[in-house]
Each structure stands twice: as structure tokens, then as C-alpha cells.
Image (cartoon, rainbow, N blue to C red; front, side, top):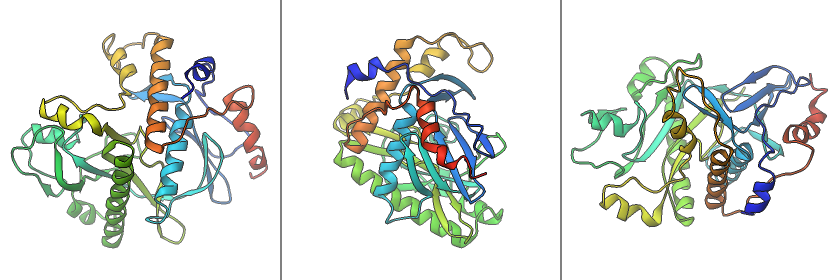
Length: 326
């Protein structure tokens, strides 16, 4: 990375991407979405950093890193599974096929890791051995490699609720997926994860776990949606230090994106209190972590797109051909 170039342009952030000329706007935690009448969806990755059910700050280059990392992986896995990407007119933008998103989020885990209430490490520490339709043996240690990757599906809460752990039997009994759909998304997820682990290993990384979202197109075909193997959707560890750190009981070395979240949590109750101003150098440090992750994962040099007076102006100029598609 060109550190001086990144520092000189650290003020080029995209906290929001409101484009009134595009129809059917929907704003997510990180992405702005616009549904075109012809069945295409415009997805713009902003630089927002979300945690504690709120937006903490905007991290320069984050949206570009996420979009370009996913673009790399969509290309590397296109032979395994259809994906929603139709075009990438800008480093922060995907034009994809609009899908009916399946109500089950597929998480694949290769290691006993995680911190959330639905993670297998949290459940294991609580005494559970049967989880997600799988039984784990006694005696596993935190961050230990599993005998084989497992799928740990959760319900997808579209209404802002909490995701809930599911077993394959529950998925079928509740009619969330048909047996054929469950078989197909399971096979795709395990194959995508295997490809991801193999390419990550070539980069000196361990892909410990990741999540996938699938949808169906108008013909009912299963299509990979959202993002794939990005720093936000996946847990990556550095392979060179994993064995020594595991042997000593230390957490694996990773791309630590939690520096901002940890800083906030140490200073207030982030669910109740007003968030204090976050130092600019801390935000920039987080930006460098995202850039390092992109370069290590893809093997490419990160080059910020500096066209236009601002990131939003650049994106608007490249999406202008769509303004009449209303």
C-alpha cells in the first residue's frame, strides 16, 4: 500500500450514498440499495462502520475494500455457484440481479471460534455439544480446527430481530427451505468454503469461518447474493503464527477490525450512551487494517479511486446512465 497516498486522501469518505434520481431506495447498515424496474439492484457500499446496532463512524476506503474483495471472490468461485453480479461500474458499486433472499443464513465454520451468542465456541463453553444438527466431541480447545467444516445455519431476521440457531430438521419442518434447496445451498456453501480456504492458504491465511446469503432468481434457481469472503463477513487468521499461539492458548493473529468498537466500549455504554468523538488517527488505523486485508487476501495492490471531487460525486457520474431507468 502507498501509505502517504492513503493518508493524503483519508478525508475521502462515503458516509452515505443518497441518489434521488434512482428509485426504490433502501438503506442497510453499510450499503445503500436501489431497485430498478428491470429487475436489477444497484448496491453501493458506503464507508460506514456499524456496531452495537448503530453507526459509529465512516472509515475511509472501507466500501471500496469490501466491494473489490467480494468482486475478487465472485470471480474465483463463479464455476461453483451462480452469483448475483451483473456489473461493477465503480469500485464501491455492484449492479446485481434482484433476488428473493432465502430466510436462512448459511455460516460455515472450520474452527471452534466466535464471540456472539450463536457462535459454536460460546455454545461449547456453555456446555453444549449438540448444536445446529451436529455433535462436537468433548475436549476441544478454543480456536481448535474441527475435524471437518460444519454448517451452522441461522434464521435470517428481516425485521431487525435477532438471528436464531437452526438445525437442518427445523429448516425443513418449518418450511424455510425445501429439501432440494437445503441440499443445494449446503453443497454450494461447503464447496465455496473449501475454495476460500485453499486460496487463503496460498496467501498465508486461514479462513476460519464465513457466512453466505443465497436467493432465488425468477426461474427459482439458487444464486449467491450479498458479499463473499470479505473482512466483514469472514474470520481470517494469519497462518504463520497460528500453531504457536494456539499452543500457548493465545487468540490467533487476525485482521483486528475491532479497534474502534473496543475504544467505544471502554468509554461508554454503546447501547445507551451518546458515542464520544472517535479520534481521526484511530479511524485511519482501522482503514489501514481493511487495506491490508484486501491486499493479503487478493494478492493485489490497493489503489484508491480518486476520480471526482468526492466519492459520492464519482459514483453519481458513473451511475448517470441509470437515472432514466425509472
